[in-house]
Image 1 (spheres, helix red, strand yellow):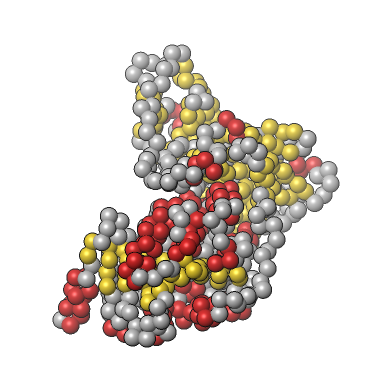
Image 2 (image 1 turned 30 degrees about the horizontal axis):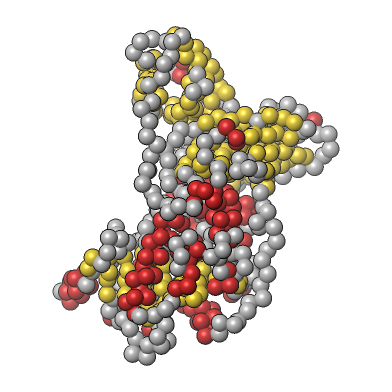
Length: 603
């Protein structure tokens, strides 16, 4: 009964302050019930109790995700208690879960005005976890609150984005991002959005004051104290390790290095062997934050890793197969006798079976689980199909010296994508007849406003041994990219990345508002049902087709599987069941008259 009255009392403290925020008054840290659940659906300001030894300084905590913000004063997090004991006024601000840097930055800016007025202070210090660190810089630079922020402590903030967000933009792989528990907000956390939009725009802004930022970047994704969270972070950290290096399970260490900031930890610093959750806890981070608060002139003498800003090249020695595609198989490069399949899977204890081309089961008993949600299988047999009861994606690595690289050559706001396939052996015959394919999806406007678009297949032109795609004919926006190279019978390679087309300064010069969530159009092409088994009806609306329809079917790598022609009719509906029935189960792209490409699933 006592707990019931405590919860009722806490909830009764919540009042509507403004259009965008609720306000909640917390009890003293030692009186805060661990079962407290504050507002989860509304941006909220949780006010801590003013300590009796109040020193006149306010610390604003911001996580960047509305429901996870409460972890900064609950669940064995000592930040509230420690700031209270030291005489600081603590305030915990929850913005949105999936709004991204610009939406959360504008909300945080509003909360800074509210808080400074409430406590009659000129400025606040901000302790920001994860995407909260990006919201802080947006609030200061884009929304004009730099004079009201004295210092920002960024705990595990991916200022340069994370490859996990890149993966999330692939519709057939976005379940992998959910393993982190951070289901939304990925659009403005991709490596290419941060590289091409956020960093150039904010770092070169006249309002930028990098000396106010103190960075705590962790490196121990494998060493978390929270056992429930550790399984997911060891999986996601394992994905990041070969692509982005040392990381905390979500934020790569290199990504946390905001240009011009102070860096508390070196890469792989023994003091920072904890994960993305632990870096947000007072018992791990307060001692370092406190030392900077008490000594503003302290210098860490950590130097920025070189060439982050110029890192426009992504490399790959692997290709990717997906569980839903029966047409996917593990093939060894020509003259290769060994490969490793690094598999991420939705079911944490998934089991795997291997089958040859005759559907005969083969022995893969060397399978071992490195961590939950991740399995590593060494392979020496060719043409193997993997099967599991769980959805999975397998990164097939073959260290035989063949790599694919993707370089973004930016000119006049329209990047050119340059692809090279190289071998350690000169004049390698395996590189002959190499084909480069790409599938792109426009995922958002430059300001991060989400868009709903179908995939498009792009082709690359070969010139002087390299392959090029010029984006000048694309609409302005942010695009995800699934890039694949193949020399049939010789090798395959894949890269997941993306790029930005258009004038960033112009797009962000005005106030960014997420008003239009979806593309609006009176034209549509769809297959009914979307999961095709024995029947498929293609319907067109708003297109003037007078002669015939030329249809091409591609796998998700952009490889053409088949094409066919159907005569046009008046009702613009076409039974294409017979043409699709021979396809193996999997995800496919259907291109219609080079007008539009839509995704469908064959059962």
